[in-house]
Length: 447
Image 1 (cartoon, rainbow, N blue to C red):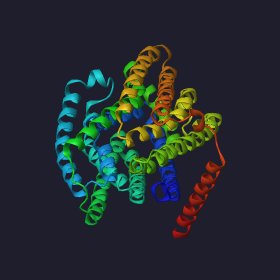
Image 2 (cartoon, rainbow, N blue to C red):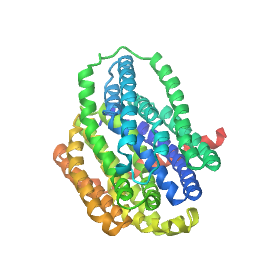
Image 3 (cartoon, rainbow, N blue to C red):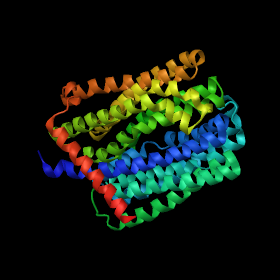
Image 4 (cartoon, rainbow, N blue to C red):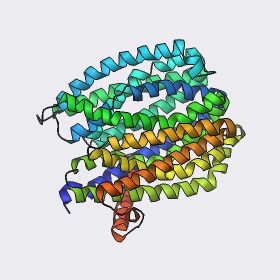
């Protein structure tokens, strides 16, 4: 096995650093979530979720898969300066186009698409769209360069800033303050990203010339799969607001938010592993080994968290959110099976994309989106929040099973190897724990 190619020690170190960052990120998110839920109440919390739904959806829909293409092409040592210049052109055009589309949606279709949500709130929220789009492009540059430390630093700064601003702004201006806090925090992060990217560009080497057509083509392959994945994640929230009301949407958003925080493990490892898988994609054995290794540990670490939270969620909700959110418990529990298997699905998706086959994620996503939307339409009107949770959990579970069988055919692996823990896995796990402890000690010493 090529030590230089895979470099498990470096991967483990980066994953450990990212895990710590994501843990802090999650804790800050919990503080913000609890404050917003208690201070705004279920109805305004529902408004807040749907107001942010519009700019985040536009950012994903109009992103054209450029962040994925950035990661892939930068990891493949394509000329960075050329990529950044092309990014700037795309960002300017897509920002203007998105704002125009957003204004049209709010003025002419908001009553049908966002029933019960005030237009003035949707209009304020739309301001965050170009910032979300531009920042997503910038973050992907750091990932492509495997500048995990910079990426983690800026992500954590954004969460700290947005949490502090959300608490103070919401206290004084209620829901409008909460929305403005998101806008201001994204402006600050935009400035931070610009400063760091300028520094990185100074060391740019004149590598392979950028082929703009291939850059866009790869982006579009990833784009449609990313869109479908995003819609799969958000379909339940949209249909609950559509069929029910903002109050129940506010309750359900808390359940989903808590459940998706379990994916801290996946996101930590996924961010580190994606560019590395792309880098070693020409070595089939190395690539297969790393895919199995990461999928396995993501599954078991997520399973451990799922079991713990499944047992304790009733007490967590009661203590943190209060009686108003007691309906959160059952939907949360029903989401857990899908969350557990969905964690593994993210790693497998990275494997497909790193092999230059993001279209597999697209085809799988289409099937799952149809299942998800169909189940939401059938179950939510009849079973309410429980129906939405079941639809989402079944969708996550189905897509993971399908991807496992495709992975088996594509890389000639035995599925049971993903679930069997061996001595080598235990050694790596001990290394990961040691790195995390060392990083924590480093933080404490610095403070």
